[in-house]
Image 1 (cartoon, rainbow, N blue to C red):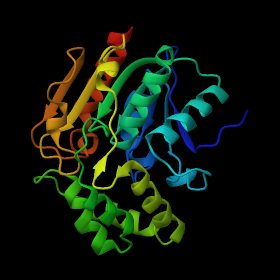
Image 2: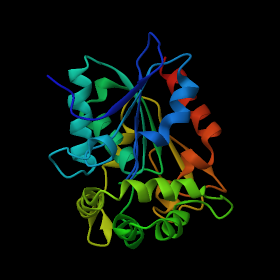
Image 3: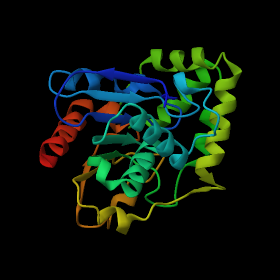
Image 4: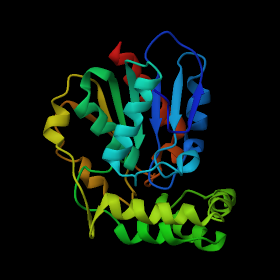
Length: 256
């Protein structure tokens, strides 16, 4: 059985590796600092989800369920039987689906501004982001993904614009946006079932999230630990990367 997703495999360690799943419109590059930070103690795998980055040619349109199935297939092909999962936004929803379907595979779960925790979502922003191709427009849209005090590096919009010179990128993002949305809302996860899993679960969110409301982490099952960063937006893993990495390390250690 062959793997089908692009993957960055980094670091060494005897325990279960850490698997990183990016959000809508992202790719493996968003996890580079996390993988470098863990490399001395843990092996980590960052996947490009279907229709993104180096997995652009995956034959099915991505949503959380498709992404979960693709990652599970690749982990099986790689002979990996236990993992720590960390997922952002759509990747967080995919990580939750993996844990719900294969709880014996998951040692810990770290969900960063995850999709599927409530029906509300800024669908207009996601659709604008999917359709935007020029650097100036991407700069304006991307700023909405971050907290008000974060200064977005110009290189981020430039990188996104360069990728979108390939028309297949925007086509894939538009299809993905419609697959994860249900009109003006998003599809939801069975949170009570998720909270009943016997593994460490952390939900990490930015108070200033303008994509998915932080209020969706209120009233979660008691076994899910919630951490909110007051000055961060939707991209909490980039805005508070050291603190988020520390929380992921806590999840790994508590699973031991």
